[in-house]
Image (cartoon, rainbow, N blue to C red; front, side, top):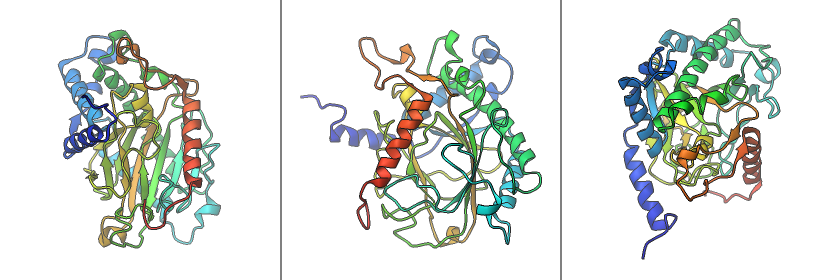
Length: 374
């Protein structure tokens, strides 16, 4: 008798295989897509582009995380961006909550105070501050109270990240073996990047408690709780090694789960430290898992406080979240749906998708929590 793919025995085997595949997060050289040749100019993909596309497909099919070099953003530009972040967050004698424009869910722009976010509703609020920026071509970011040069530095970084994201979306279509006429399947949904955001995350020094802030306890506060990103792709830049980021593969059919299939206190998390230089971590979001009909995964990830030494240090990260523009219809490409089958998920617009995800998150926040663990 055959077991259904959702049987616990099958799910356990799949999870162990995916975790093993994730033991070493791959690194790819994206430079073949950063030059105007091959599929970037409407011609047949170059050998280098096909190689990179194959590497992307392998990583996204298994777990959805990879290190990426040569995205067209210089190391000096990344250093300048993090210097601007330090100047913003670590100012002495500054009440950031009154000096800066505060974040609201309606605008998704501005300053988020310490413990103002709650990525995993089964945990206490997250131990970080943030500042969110959106496209200056579509929105009026309120930069009041920010240090001199902050707006200019972030604008330069945004433009470089946007260019890389456009090209990476084309690489993703090639990786999924979509028809040549549809290599812009994802890229054409972000002509304005009006749903994208650039987010400074600042993790100030905090207390360390073994078995708690290191993620072992499923209800204690950590720097960011377990979650999957909502959008399609995240380009994450880390300030140095920035220890603490951990990732764990999700399962097929898990795209609508807020925190992913992994219980917070379970084992099997893989460390994903920064590589320094201009290397980014790129990961798929739950919308991409849904859009690809689960051909690709969106892994759960979190940021823990690994030890007392790291607890005493400030930590910075700079994610660029890529999401289809307002009005985009999220529906799996026909080539990704087996003949005779229905897509795993109903067709939905990008706004409806986010509304549903946020509502689900709010419901989980209001649910009773167990004391001392999950």
